[in-house]
Length: 304
Image (cartoon, rainbow, N blue to C red; front, side):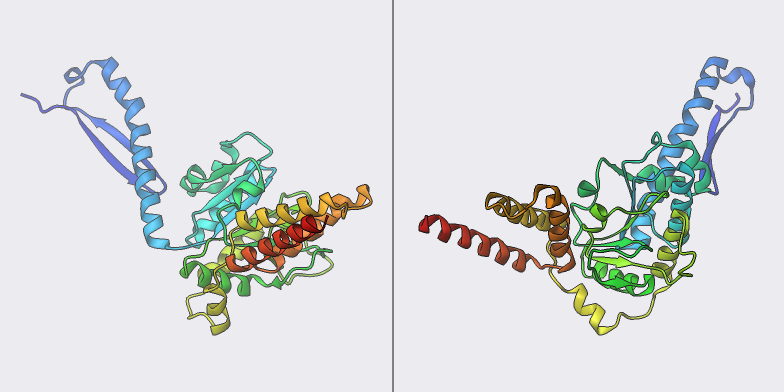
């Protein structure tokens, strides 16, 4: 009596496969054999990816989210994923990608980091992508009229490590390949990361920017400086709370005609919102500012 066919799971590199072994071709009908050859590898890959992701979460611990804002080419998304995984990072978020998603070209360039792409969150806009974040960095090489603290990747990742260890949620924004982040994107960040490159040729592609930032995250194993620890223990307001504060002030200022003339109103609102994020407000400070505006409105209403 021949033993039944056996399915063997083998994992090599980033992939997994299942092979059917049988002592006799007649021990299982050909149709069933064909079905198993198609279905089992798919199930094996899903199981392997789930196990790998669980292991990544356990091994890497707290880490920032790398947010690719309106990326244009799948190849650059794949290169970013590969760079992240090189340094133990696996939390990617993608905002409004130009090309179809999932993107086979991203998988090809990821070169073994495909599971990171599988787990990447895809968001329709930046506001939703950073809604749960306590502190946000924006990467840019261009001078901005928006006033923000400017950090090197080394300094920013030291701060991010300390904040993550203290339970804060940190994100780093990377702009689209053509022109980088817009002011409307940068205004949502608390600080800017700029790489000290040649001022006559400061352009970095998406993969390079992610690699430099991920490298600084991965190499820092020394104890955080006291000033960094102090920042990490701050009870920052979330992006949702800061957004609500900005809207509260915009609505009230709109009512009294502050944003004038109309053609300058959008730019004035960007500057105001940038101010809120640059301040690095705590939850208590956000509540204080809400209370201040409510009291002003109440007094003016009573006077009228």
